Length: 207
Image (cartoon, one colour):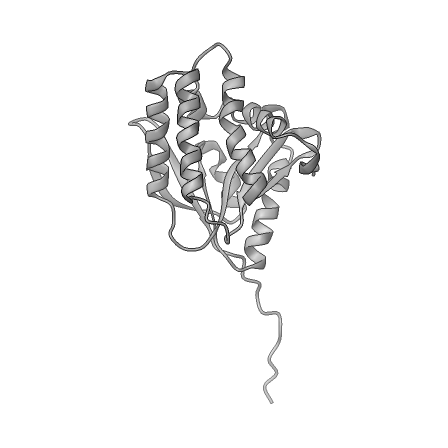
């Protein structure tokens, strides 16, 4: 894994921008032809900055993908985070237009309504550039979050914005938690993972 501390926030945001450029939700929101990648990068920069302060960032070698996640002891959706989201709405409005910004605000409100209430590890963004997919790198990105959750016997939650990724998350122990309807033709999926319970290997001997 690449060392996060040596990289700028904008560099990590660029990795995520390239990784999510073909994601259905980003194709809906960032559908302009001019300056699209730079706009998506500007969208990700506040999230990366927040994860650097309060969460965790995992990067693949050669910066082919990234994962932002939060341990369970972090109150992800605190007042400062809500203010950050307002700032992101403003970024979208300035770069893409007010109507698109309002749609993205609606999208995150729908996602927020389905957040579990119990203490949990939260995987916020996990993405790989198209050329790096299908090589096992997604496993390397998500495993630190799962190891943390298992070590502390805590559940893990994420929202999949692409139905093609559901099988990947299911292979890593996630189950479909809830559908999150965004439009009549597009839904996201809340995914929930219980911590791994090692089987008891001890053998009872009855005399």
